[in-house]
Length: 303
Ligand code: GLU
Image (cartoon, rainbow, N blue to C red; front, side):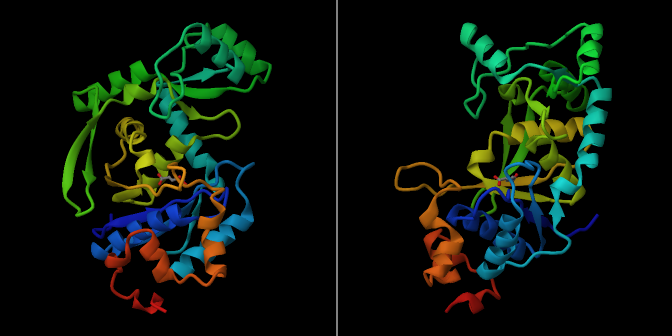
């Protein structure tokens, strides 16, 4: 394993990059420079219906324009579904996943009649439909080619976690803006029986990100605070899959005038549009609050 830190930016090509992405990419790139580390780019395109090739091309152009460089080859998640399937097969063998045939409306009805707590994203926890289905019924439904997701059996996963670490909660190291480490403890049970393999593609964001950070040797995961809570699930998957533990830095988010996190449709904050208006990469750094942190070698962006 490389002794140098490894960092990455992992955008999903389902829209144009905006100032929020610029902040995320620059935070990771600057930290890689500061630590003398390597910087990788990963295209998180598992959602084959929403991701578009032209956005991938634009990501390369926008990042290069910002003065960001990355190592080749770029990992494209859509080309590695078999790797994620190998990981989910292993979790199945460990007895930690179960097939869930429930439709969205079945789940909606069940949680309306019997409300459950919400997960950190605000979605009602899975009410357990189709959990512990008799083997024969599972075989029958599989035989009828009914679509199914694979869900984590959270109780069993916590048993496995406890068997390995002695605790039912996970911990990780979070670096603050000055790189000071703090040990954080979280309860993955907050996510309930989360979907690990979606119905439409043979993975989920949570599984793919966990597998890829490990196989790319990522030592420092930098990403927005919106993914802070998801880290408990990622740490749980890392432990049960026997993968190494990276350190994390969840950076602040940028908000639009409405107070909401910038979204893909935040037109006037799109990097391409700003570039077209003659905004310089340095001004982008200023707008995202990183102008004081330009790493060595980026002076060429000052125009
Ligand atoms: N692909 C995710 C996004 O665009 C980021 C994943 C991560 O950094 O862990 O929000």
